[in-house]
Length: 592
Image 1 (cartoon, rainbow, N blue to C red):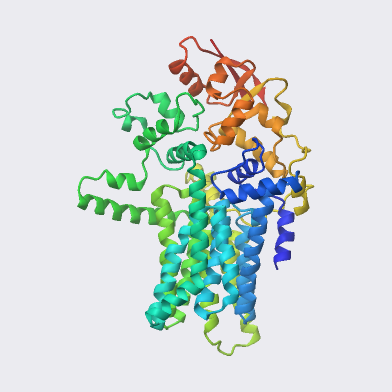
Image 2 (cartoon, rainbow, N blue to C red):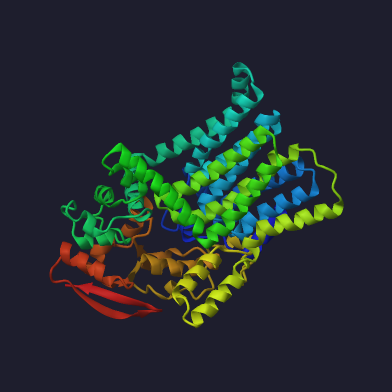
């Protein structure tokens, strides 16, 4: 099954599913320079990338390492199914669940790096839980490795140990009434090594990135993240408190324009983020009395839960999880079986509500998709321990078909709402309802990626990862720019769109391309490798370079924000001039 999964991955032919993963690959593979330490991953991965690139100079070493981590974890998820589940239809359901989760919803083994970390940690926790429950040492080492892989991909994944292991230990302590001394010995024996390894990785990662060389970059990124990853207030709401900042200053830093290294450092961003942040937790702090805090909290939780449940694409997937869970709850009368399922669902909905309150709704679809994996893997622990009643082979086949259809229909076909949507479209044609709202509903329903996204690409093999840094045969727009000393400074969204074209060809950008094309406001801003890169191309301050460096241009449709920044901070005499179009993007020159 693992080999089959790798073959499917080779046909998907994407080694990074999103622009963030692609940027991490660029940094880790040294595209910006010799310093390849990306703060979003453990420094050990960056170190391994550097060593591996000596042997495989043209490979995307980061993706090869992550695919190896994911393949190892995927192997053990299949191993658990085939070793612990004897009933054929349960095996089929669980295998289909894994394939559907990994390939139909998340671009395969190269899913977003946060999901990669979560998947590895999830498999590791499954292995350690089984080792603890059955006192089986064979699961300890692979469990520790999977957890370590997840922690290295993103260290926040380590925090999932707290609720999951906490509930596991509480369940075991109460259910089996183990003597405390025996219980503690068992904890140390089966969980101690994992905890020590994960704690070591977490501490070493934090220690490395808090060294003097990287500490400023770490603080800069934290302040930047607070401004762009969460809801922010309108200018009118903070105008009286924003002493020393203009409206354009505020608009610039909350819209990914912060490349003025003479003015915008981590303290500048932190001061603005403290004024601007507008997520639920900040709003609670601003309530006057304990009573108002409690009332506000209850209303928000109910509101977020109801609103997100009513969004059709999320409701469709969440409904499957909820109905299936109710079925399991009613079927099994044993108190402890029900308790495990209740814990599962509590965690599932708590995580969703937390991210909704935090303002990171972009993560909710993936969390709901992940929820199917969590609930269906419940079969491994609970349903497998129940003795099967005698059923005819025909009924078993029916159960497989029905459960598989209910579970995977939203992913593979997503046709439940097609008749409803067609009816709504007809009604909009006759002006009975608002056509714009129908389009919003349709986008919501079909916005969840479904089906295995096979690519129409000539690069259809994992082997092609070895040529990721060679010259690409692509019409990538940036490749045609940047002659002589020209420097194009791009609006972040346009730049990411163009990089995505190169990404889909499984190619990393050349150093020559990056020497003539940079983004203004990507998360690489303020990082050591990017600062060194800008110095190497003679533009340590990108904003000033637009005004004072020869042959330097801005690409994008938000040129007015940059113009106003230059006028307020550098020269009243600054002028702006349209130069040409590059593709569909306008190019501008600033001068005095």
